[in-house]
Length: 358
Image (tube, rainbow, N blue to C red; front, side, top):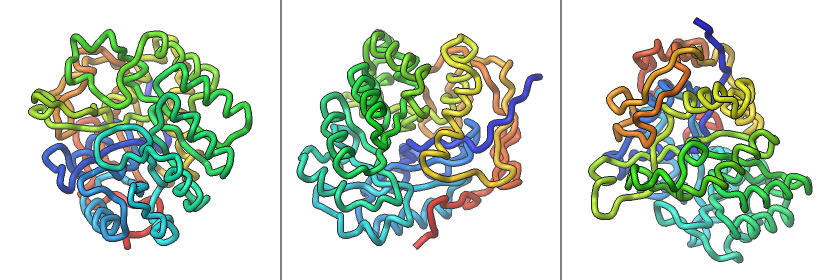
């Protein structure tokens, strides 16, 4: 049984829900799903209900996740349309970064004014990065701000050839930018939508095969830095409603999908592992604690089935796919938290990697 050890896997792009959306998922359920997926830590986005846009909401969220998380974690603070920049100096030490939504997505944090975007860039601390949802021409607008303020910026869930071309040039120009892509944009395309229906709806949307090829090419060339899930669970009843929300879960499927891709020759095994661990650690400037790793059997194959998932939403857009790589054990800070079937860490075991609860 060929076991590999991956030190400190992190998913820096998750929507753990909870709070007013606990019917979709909870901090407890989704940090368990993260551990089952091989992850040491997850970073949670601010577009929950209520949105994480002031100190009171952040403090409440910090306390709740600190109480319930089974793995280590970080929280993003959300840039607000109402201009919450006065909060930045106080809250920056408590969070993993600032999230700016520049294109339409779930929640109410869209900032489509160039002037307001610049205000947030000008006010944010350089000690924490900015993570952006930016699509197509908006990528160019954000790059103008990066060029002006030299603020380290991570471009989340990049999905098109046009976006990749812009970011390739930005890296060649020496701008402080990093790039993440999601398994659903690498594995699925718009051709899958007739079969998936609402289960294939996410933001950014699934793209053309040509865009998919551009993403894989950018991975091979080192333009893409990390693989992130954009884990965004919704209840089955919501997805099957007349107005299905955007978003798909991914914490438990990211690693096996990438290991299958490595077996298929799309990238090396080492690169797949680095894009889920070392590269994320480098970008967010953190290092795993001693004895923090996942043991993975890279030879075992299995079919993704909803009954085997821990995420509360209980479904996956990858159901029925055969993948490679079974997580056998996960250890965090010297404690065994997963035995291949069960999460062993109690609620509240997880630590905030970016400060202390206020």
